[in-house]
Each structure stands twice: as structure tokens, then as C-alpha cells.
Amino acid sequence: MIWFIHKRRKAPQLLEGLEAAVRRLPVSHVAMPIIQTKLAAVQAGFGVEQELDKVFDRYFSMKHGIFHDLSLVSSTYFQVETFLITPAYAVLFEVKN
Image (cartoon, rainbow, N blue to C red; front, side, top):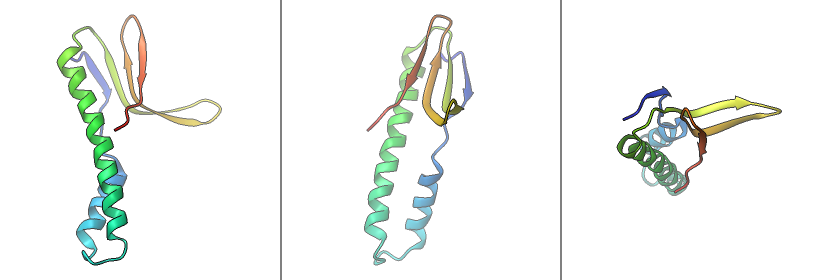
């Protein structure tokens, strides 16, 4: 059971934009194959992130916190896909399909 989620995962804006482009462009449009290929890749990546969330829900019973899509700054800006923190340790997850 999740102790707390500080920042919930949302669908990427790119996914929403690509879905809108597919809905609005004619099927015969020259860019449609490129858009559909990119859309499939983004959907797959987001699907893997959602599967990781299910693993946390199902198998992680100790107290923990989760941050999704955490944007941080050091000498430069960077993003952490999933940050898991417990009383004993912290883990950064970067999942790929």
C-alpha cells in the first residue's frame, strides 16, 4: 500500500498533442506515418511508467513516498522520472520500453 504520493503521474503533453494531430489530420496527410510512429513510441513509454506504478501498488508495503516527473536544478535543470523514498533509502527510476 502506498504511504503517500507527492506528485502524481500525468500523461505527457506530447502524447496529448500527437493524439490531437492524429484526430485532426486527414489519414492521407504526408506527415501521418511519422506522427503515428511517434505516437506509438510515446504511448509505449507512458504505458511502461504506468506498469511501474502498478508494481509499487501491488508489492511495496513499507512506508514510502513517490514523486513522478520531478524537475530539479543543480548546475543545470534535469528531470527524474520516478523518485521513491523510504525511511531507509531513496531510489531514482528511469524506465524504458
